[in-house]
Amino acid sequence: DTEVTQTPKHLVMGMTNKKSLKCEQHMGHRAMYWYKQKAKKPPELMFVYSYEKLSINESVPSRFSPECPNSSLLNLHLHALQPEDSALYLCASSQNPGGETQYFGPGTRLLVL
Amino acid sequence: QKEVEQNSGPLSVPEGAIASLNCTYSDRGSQSFFWYRQYSGKSPELIMSIYSNGDKEDGRFTAQLNKASQYVSLLIRDSQPSDSATYLCAVTPPGGGADGLTFGKGTHLIIQP
Image 1 (cartoon, rainbow over the protein chains, first blue to last red):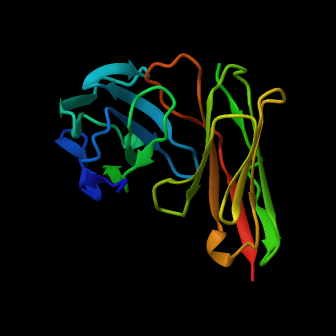
Image 2: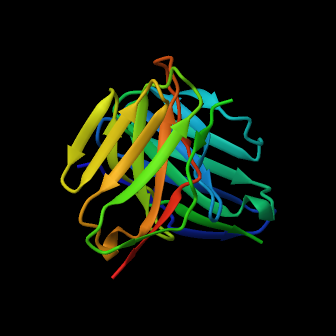
Image 3: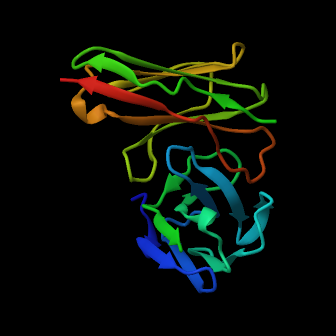
């Protein structure tokens, strides 16, 4: 089973709202990732968690705040977003960090008004 | 800067023919290579992973890796209309630490019935 789940599937928020995206996997994977994908573009890496510690932050604005409460769960907290942040947010996980296959969740489609 | 190049297409192939998708990468030390399929509005789905030079076959799919030429390809035999999608080539850099995927822009494949 290579299932990564994400909630919610869709999210509409205003620029003053605070919301959170949730990602969960029960495969015992020790690396988890957040990617952002705009329409007709490839996914772009935002954050990497390795053994529950943040190991990569790809210069993402502070209005995006990741959190890894435990080895199965990854959150992305959103605050004061801009309309240009509207995108598909993808979570992925891999057994171990360092080049192993990443499995993607279905994504959360975010619209910022 | 890490770069992954793909022809964006569209690549149009008759049903039953072989579809050939190509990808080049700039970081000579890259170690892990992946092909993902993405249907419109959906998340990337792993098709193949390849780590060493040569061919790797899985059903109708064959991945080919040539590290000397920094080239990865995907062949799809007996193409079906359901293979119509965007195919993303992805690479992880060397180092062995936690790294995200660097994606090419994707090739839009159309299988004509």
